[in-house]
Amino acid sequence: MDKQAVISLLEENHQIFISKISSLSDTDFNRKIASKWTSSQQLEHIIKSVKPVDMAFSLPMFVLKMKFGLANRPSKTYPDLVKKYLKTLEKNKGYEVPPEFTPEEIPLARKEKSLKKLKKLASKLASRIPRFSEEELDTYILPHPLMGKLTLREMLYFTAYHVEHHDRQILENLKLK
Image (cartoon, rainbow, N blue to C red; front, top):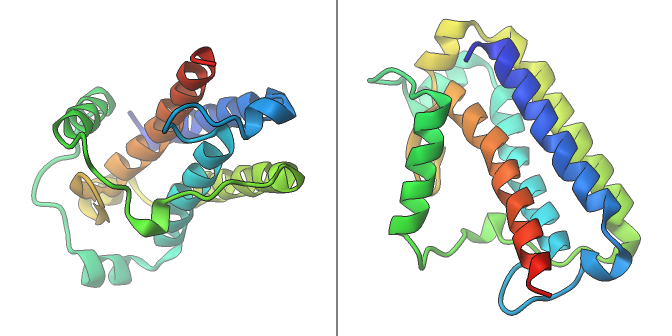
């Protein structure tokens, strides 16, 4: 997938998620179902997950290289990255999300502000991608807390899929009510 396709996927998946959260009733936004995250926690988790990726894409390339190194393998395809993520989740069933990505409940009064924040973050990240060449997206790496080192392209794939994954979780959780 070239970078323009990645940008489109990233923007589309985040917009679908934002629309889903926007359409939830006030009750469903913070509805607690068993030990599952509420929809507001799903939103907070996505914000906390996109923020460091956006920040990393704002860094000069020499900083990325110095801090994280360079890839020693080609980037996975989008389907292969998704497969790896799902397999890693399955293998690490009891995995605890690191504290910096653990969501708090978002009060109803902050719902719209949080949705705007995510929209701005996703848009900012998408706007940073064009400064990287296709080759640079496959050369520089970033750490992922569960999957280890990912190329920049793979991190974008993950970010696009991750929001879709949590969108599906919202649907599944609300079906349980």
